[in-house]
Length: 314
Length: 310
Image 1 (cartoon, chains in turn red, blue):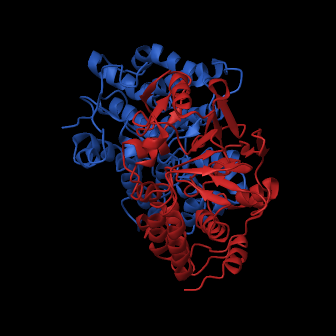
Image 2 (image 1 turned 180 degrees about the horizontal axis):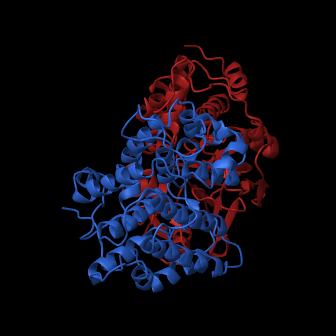
Image 3 (image 1 turned 90 degrees about the vertical axis):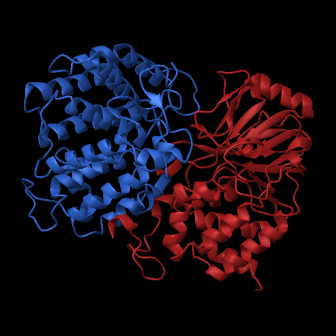
């Protein structure tokens, strides 16, 4: 299938769903681009880093308004594109289209929600079936997720990952050896990268209350920076009231990019702008005004006119 | 204090496949039976203002005492990632008082073992002091607590008292969520039924309809609102004190902004159903699958003699 990327983007911006066959072709194309990426991609500043978006499509559009349109601004997304929000399909579709359009200027790394298992529980599967009447696009998207890379390093200085560190990964070269082309496992180094959190209450690694990954303390973070000769760790994965949080004297930062998370948390969001001089600026923003004006267009039925009630109620 | 440091209940659900064993356990059967039983007895009743007898009043007073403790707990000043760690202070205060709190609900002497188990379910029903969040796993712990007291004959079962107990708990929890900005535990975002609660929807729908009989007329006193009125703020306000479904809906309006169909599509779709009978039964089926049947939710449930693993 020949894809007209610009035309597809125009539709998606208007939250018009693309045909199933087009989505399948987009995912296939993105896989071709992702398959060659290293598990640790090397990026050059300037680049703008985006944390969790979780299907908040209008807030993603707001990010481009605030931090610049592609390709004028380079983007690194830290994962968790889908689940929880109302527009995960639109969000991941647009990001895939941008990746195809500007493969060297848009980078997508994998979050713990880019997974078959998690998306079946946290909304993306439900949303795909509601919007498309079948799980076919969910299957295409989740197959594509297996190709997403796991981390990035900006200017040999900032290590970027969705969740955090792993006790099995001391050196960046060890990350490069992971066979990432698979569903996110329940445990092990790949799971840790997408699940772990920093914790001010322990110095070393400790069991995570999430039931996956670890919590890691300041000493672990310092050792990682030292061994790998980088200056800081940038990650997403945790809601922050102010849109970002800096820990351990600034060597670990969390960037969170879903404002008023799930229409309720009242939190701010941010993106981190890393300039070519190495300076870093958290550009903080609030929920996009469009969120309040979303028009209802399904009225309990999907695009095929079928009821979208869960089976429990049928 | 470690989640399992009470040394009273045992953690049995440690990995995904353990859920299948849980679904065959005596504990599961009992929790399911209690939920259906409570949903059966609330039909035809509005939430009352006071307990019907002294034993139920003891329980309501105990929740009100916890609620007072919550009000007196100071927030922790300074910058926090999201939830306020003052919640830990509240949680620890209830841990300290847990035995007295349970004892204050008893209508007759009770074994130390049972009091200890009940007290752990009570503490776990507040939310997680580690993650500063609250979700249906904590709500399940309250079901276990109330169900345990009922099974040990500390209060007599009737619809209005069950409604009052669950409403008192719901009120306290809603206050706690707002005061300490507790995160939704394991939230499905807009694609879940609700960020925190499930049982109030079951009991509220069951107030309007007999869950065992689709043909019977509602015994609910006063007007039964249509399910579709969840988007009508006047009707929600008029019913929130009398009915748990509308109480929970009303809370959504206080914490969420934006269009109802977008922030709560599941409830919006359910509101298109013609009968509360269908809604109540659907919600019970959904509870079995999405709460009792989900590893992330039930992994924290503790087992002992009241709720047995085998």
